[in-house]
View 1 (cartoon, helix red, strand yellow):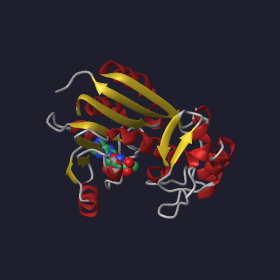
View 2: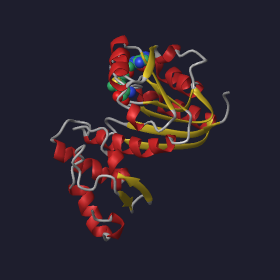
View 3: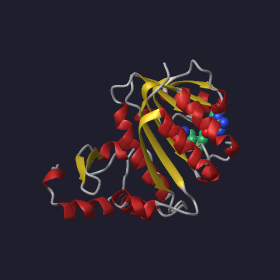
View 4: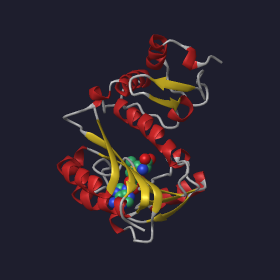
Length: 244
Ligand SMILES: C[S@@+](CC[C@H](N)C(=O)[O-])C[C@H]1O[C@@H](n2cnc3c(N)ncnc32)[C@H](O)[C@@H]1O
């Protein structure tokens, strides 16, 4: 296998744009790739965990998989609105716990992934359910079952479910766009470090190759991913100030 660090950047750029993320048969699986645009190193093997025919969502999964590598070293992982627990493999924490309003999803998730979880609405998370690395993805302002009028309280619940010193990764979608400002304020008041990525362009389903090409273009040039019509935020917070 070729060492990608040894490949000149103009070739790695072309490779990035032309290669499909196909689980299991990727020619450069397990090889580190240097993203010269953002100056970060990450690996293709984990980029391929979740896929979407929507370029905006494919970009989200690439970002999420990169960021969730940082869950390594944390003890407890908490997946809020976990659905079928598809995010479980991305948690590098010692343990994993999910919660979701849908009982059938919790049962199926437990049976298929071996994760543990409870049936619970975000708005009702009890104070003793907490994690060191907490995520809530594809739900607030995105999922049609979620009441967007509860976006701020749901985000607050996610913050309260994060232990002191812990990290929180949440994406918020266009249905909750009126609350983006309030949510950003809570994030910056509650955590030492806050990083917000705007995206949402190309949220329609496309041929997988087209979606892959677009998502990789957005990965290299994130400003192109911003959308006025379907705005999304990926909010990554580190080092919770309060909590126990
Ligand atoms: C699109 S799925 C995302 C699941 C998972 N987070 C993922 O990334 O694969 C949205 C999930 O949010 C759950 N959900 C919606 N509103 C909720 C609420 N108020 N409290 C808890 N779960 C909720 C749904 O049952 C569904 O499983």
